[in-house]
Image (cartoon, rainbow, N blue to C red):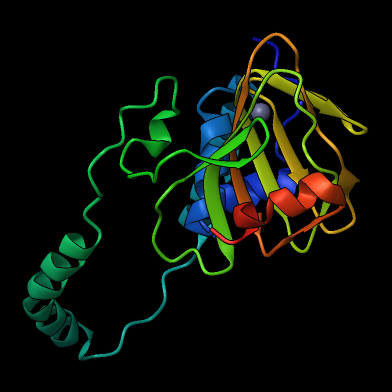
Length: 219
Ligand SMILES: [Zn+2]
């Protein structure tokens, strides 16, 4: 597989630093698990971060620090148990072939039609706020509606391909778009295209087909 489109360095740095929200992290992770170049970049960043932590000089401790720490250890097992219960992943969704490993702990909604030749399937992640995470499937050769974005849109192409003014995107590729980008993707003719998408805010759809896709932006 030749991967030609990768996340920006800024996105990979935020991914490595753990500052991306869960939805975006999943979309980036689905690319990184398939892309040796990005895995290498991420590992390099992790090494640099490790060296920086080692270089930090130790902070002076107060006289009662040990007593405070022991008291905290006494209190924390219950809190940790409660937290691990809350963070317990949902039943894995293994009914979809070819899904990236990072999606395995997350349950998904049903596929639903959102327009001619276009289906979406929500990924049920907690605490997404204005961000929606979903699989999007376009039939071979279908023209997706022309649209721009209110916020950012991260797309990881899992199966098939699409193209638009910004280039050709194939399985393994990654696309980042923001509010300045307006495009009209066309799915490759050979097979359906399935993408994992993290979309912030609303799409700004144009045209008749766009109006058919309204349910798509109100997940
Ligand atoms: Zn990459």
